[in-house]
Length: 115
Length: 115
Image 1 (cartoon, each protein chain N blue to C red):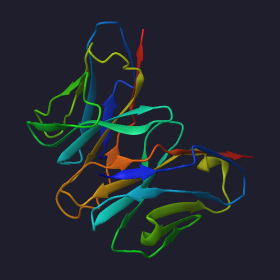
Image 2: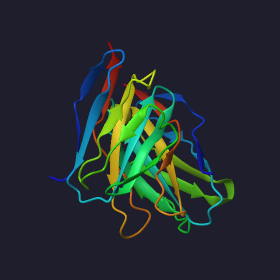
Image 3: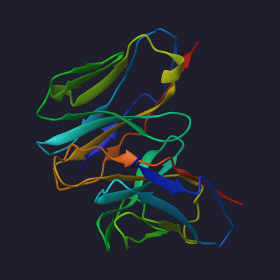
């Protein structure tokens, strides 16, 4: 079955440590997105990518980095510069060909906590 | 700039009651797309419906119905005869017609259906 796989489901970070969240999709979607969800804050966009080797900052990109070396993969690194990383992280993708009303499909999320 | 407002943070209803979740949006685009997603306790976002700005026809799907009114910039979601399984956080989202931009989400409404 096609879908978006995020791993790990739970992740713990020590102070000063970088951690990487994985997002893989086999839907052949062009665009991929990372969102952060905090209680009562809804979903806030961190980064997105519409094509391999290209990506754009979202509303809260500081303290995060991404890469898009392959169409299927869009890993997110939470760096030590992100002082409040505890949150639920959601990866999404969608095709760009065709109508602009295509919805974004989401993975199951990764919950990141500070030790 | 795009903006989505879900004024209701939390709603509690007793099973079998009807409930309406409000969504008000702002955009300068003449063509735009609206979406509703459901986030059950497990965390993944489930796509429910999309609506194009040029299609003001309301839609019904089983116990779910959506009322789109351009005149008031609203896209409200009604659940008829609510069930415990409807308990979730519901998000309204907007995409403008300015290229293939990411979705802008409201902060969500947490619905609790009590047996």
